[in-house]
Amino acid sequence: MRPEMHKNFEYGSDSVIEQERDNVRKAIECKQKPDFYPYWRENRYKRAFSENQHGKCGYCESKVLAAYYGDIEHYAPKSEVHELVSPGCESFGLSNVTDRKTRQISNIGYWWLAYDWSNYLLACNRCNSAWKRNLFPIIESERKVRPDSNIPETPLLLNPFDDDPIPHLNYNDFGQIIGTTEQGRSTIETCGLDRESLRNAREEKARRMYGLLREFLDTNNSLEKQNIIRIIIDMGKENYAHSGMIRSMLYHEFKLTWRNLEEYLEAAE
Ligand SMILES: [Zn+2]
Image 1 (cartoon, rainbow, N blue to C red):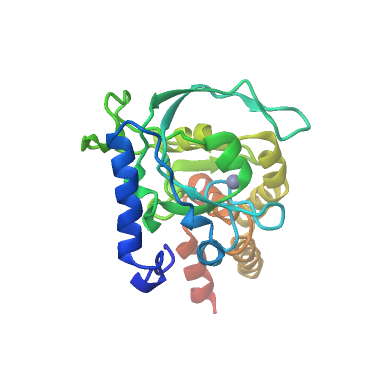
Image 2: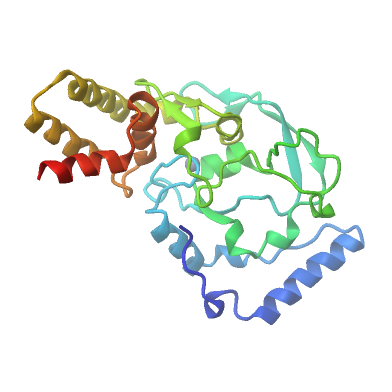
């Protein structure tokens, strides 16, 4: 759920924002590169999203603030739109991205969403600046017109506030992420979610989770089952890094939902 955005919590006043949007609109009409005033970089906005997202990147579920300053990311890019030509990979032992190529397909972005809270999320610097950048894949395979042409588009990139990622993403016990739908696969590719550094960060938790699930299936002792569920519920707390991975594994590998676990405990108590 997005942070509550009250009118008077927005950028000063509606008229300030309308003026900024107008400046951008005029620049685009005059075929000039628009200047966006970066209101979204103010601390109070980042704080609101950080609290709401438990300090985690909306794409990779890493705890952002322990390692980076964190960015307010525009889900739909504001200035231009690119498409992926070659996915590239992370350099071994480094976080640099190599052999990744994109191509600009519109020099106009979703400019009218630049100051729109519904287009924001907290993201880590790696997902935002190194991988996703100005990519915004859509189901309609070829983007023939610029984004403000009023042609309906269906994003392939999962939005952490609007889409439940669980049906789209699964993980193996090495922490490798697997897209189970076109949206899942596109999101992984767009944000580099299967990069080695992330697989390493997820591996320990993924292995533990698979071990617990196997123990759960192997035992008929209800007390042991309850203990395992308590451990899993603790591992999947929303404020922990990669808690979505825990829930995805449960769903794909064992056809269980988080609610099923809670109900099991409630019935036992
Ligand atoms: Zn990230």
